[in-house]
Length: 125
Image (cartoon, rainbow, N blue to C red; front, side):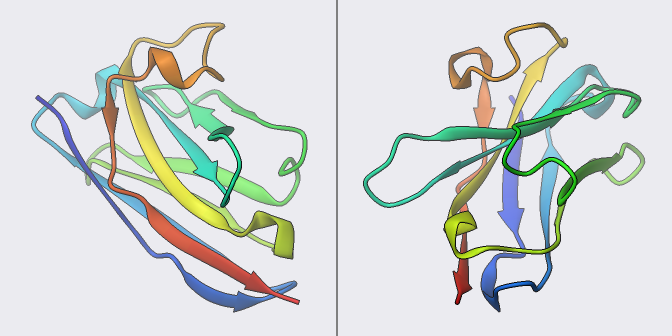
């Protein structure tokens, strides 16, 4: 059983930066692809980005490409989401998620087995 703990959210002005962390325990971290999703009030949860187990491959949704970067430190069993040039429309609760393996369905929240509790990111204009 894998446990994920999200942290690092907060209030930031537009154009600012935040780094979210996702600390994992209870599994072999390098076996798991990690992903970030977000959910804004009144909206469905949406895919932000993902990284494979070795950290060699990442995918992002179009709206964050070039601004957000996912990374991982397998020795620390932690994944990160570096968010730069933040916009008010990035305001949401951000969740990390984990799944065994890595495949073409990475943008679907249904393929992820484990979830963090979420961390609030608020971007003011």
